[in-house]
Image 1 (cartoon, rainbow, N blue to C red):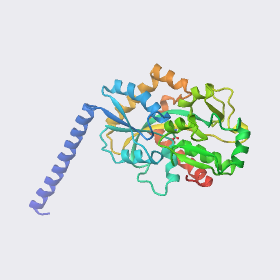
Image 2 (cartoon, helix red, strand yellow; image 1 turned 180 degrees about the vertical axis):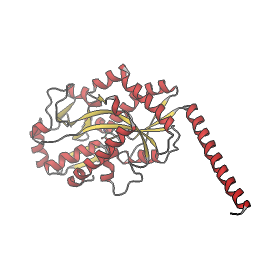
Image 3 (cartoon, rainbow, N blue to C red; image 1 turned 180 degrees about the horizontal axis):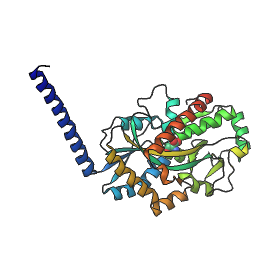
Image 4 (cartoon, rainbow, N blue to C red; image 1 turned 45 degrees about the horizontal axis):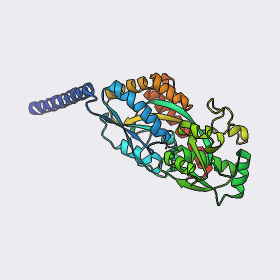
Length: 332
Ligand code: ASP
């Protein structure tokens, strides 16, 4: 090699070494200063609904421990996939984080082409909480129990309306499994979250809805809605007299809504670590725990509030739900 060529190779190497060292320093400085402004917590459904409630419950204590507010931003539409797309494309600087439920795992089977890949376009922070669902009817809907509901739907399938929060929402998943197990299709009314769907159920504008227990327990206890069953294999401590859907004939019916917190791919590890610490603190806050307990929401064990746990769980759930959804022959 010529002397001049050797010098130019050495200079190039030195320059690229300096560039990487500077980039590392800048990254460390950015992580040290983090957070220096409010953080956006993107929620993929309407304000006042179950996902929004879990988000708002953790946002305040997370903000306290991070020393900056965590501000909830509801990004609505397409069963949560518009929000997921927005987060996948956001700057990976720690100022955009995302809470989503198991729709993150069901969307790949529901959409021919998603604008993001749940296994590639995100950083994983941790699981949060598991929430059961209930199958509800409007107060003056004729069927009084699950058996009557089955018969009524089979006889009136062209009349019955079922609300959900769009393809990718758990209300849609629960509804489609229910319909496919009964072997009927009813008219589906999509909303931008089950907050507004529940308002319409209470107002008598739609007939039935599957929704988390987060907002629904008080309405069930006050007889403002009819309840036909819980979606988990076991009865709920908050509603001990409400039978499971499984025990009423749809054996194996099991939908429990898990949640995860994510960040855009490329968010620096030291920043993710700070967010994880804040999430763990929020989930062990006695006030948060009490409020989640009241809605029959189970906070996950702290061993699940990790990137590895969330990523492994998401992968398993994509593989679990894909075949079930394709067999149920949706989307709607
Ligand atoms: N419960 C909702 C769902 O069906 C969404 C929401 O939290 O509003 O996915």
